[in-house]
Length: 178
Length: 372
Image 1 (spheres, each protein chain N blue to C red):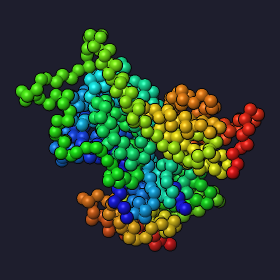
Image 2 (image 1 turned 180 degrees about the vertical axis):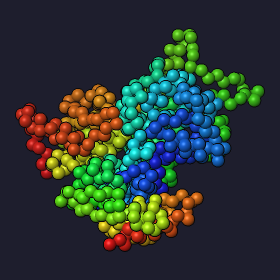
Image 3 (image 1 turned 45 degrees about the horizontal axis):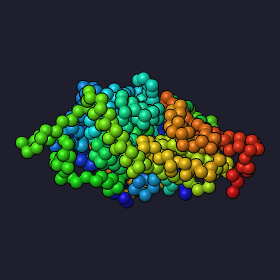
Image 4 (image 1 turned 135 degrees about the horizontal axis):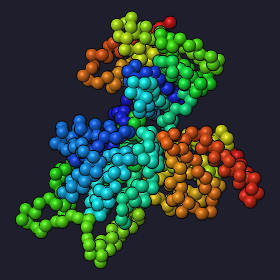
């Protein structure tokens, strides 16, 4: 029985909530229990945004993540705020294009990826969230390509469906980053 | 893959209302329930329904009053300060014996308070809120699925008893997404009856010169008559109490600790029960689903063999008064946070552990620590 408690965090506009929704849909497609809880309020209006995604074989109790097993981190304030909360042996995936701090905790696994740089090099700077997600999926060994594509179809609105390919490409770029 | 979709609790409630035959929604935006209005604004025009953003909460509830009087399934939704503004209208609707559904996505108070989730409106929704002798039927969902099923159920109960029914949510349940299956959302509603109010002979649908006038009002200046109306309304409430108490008990039968919590707090208690297993304290959860009528007999039964009761609320303790009314022979503890702060499972667990160790050290109880 596995439970992934994934906290995604960054600035408003980086697609934190979208990446979380994609993760939640992946869980749903894999027949897991899932919950998605966004931060809402003044902080999301131009400030930091975060989102709690739980994917579990068990029934989900509280949707609030106090100690994430995985932290996806896309800005410095979130890094400083949330790294101390990550559970022991947990995972932190951080965008090293935006966060130049080194993680000091020895009991968690830090994975750095210059996601914003990779996304910019691919002509889609706004898809750094998908690059981050791809790297995380690899680390967690979560889902496969067909699950990602099905989840993208559920998450991208119909009027923007032409964005599916570039999103997929960005996820793959993160997944294959070494 | 299942046919389930991910939806916010607010959206699930709105969609369920439409499926339950609601074609009249009157709202006024307030965080954290605005998605309900947004969803209705998008959907209602496409299904020949009415979405109206009123000039205020007071106007919105009175529009519900009008639509309900005409026989339609009508709804409004709001959050705490907005619900306070609606109290006059709610009392009038109850006094006129009209069915309607109100969704309250509770935020922290008092006053304008904050926009984060809370459960500090329990007193308001279960003990009155508006003036006069009346009751609201109150359903408390704790999942997105229940946001939908209970909204549909609220329409059925409102029609059945000709009384306002309220769905008591909170900012977390409104904003979070979970998978939802609308096949599970059943309302005792025949879609062909959306514009046919013939089963509501009291409604002001127009006489067509075929019957006498229907008059819907809450005023009656004749004390003898008004008392009689109240007596009849309370006979109706006795029926609700007899038929509609709902609850859920989760966990092992012979637990040492009984948590009593509803909505989001109940979910947090489930985590706490898991946490307590590591401490070798057995706990179970009693979750009232109807806050009024309060499931008193089932609570007494659930508490029968426990050593201590811990009430958990996102407030400074409101439902605990109803728990105390029903349980006199057990120690009752409280764990709660307010202002938009959310109780931590570890903090709740500590209250439970302290509760059982107090009993242990007391000498008056043979409690041995609940070891397996």
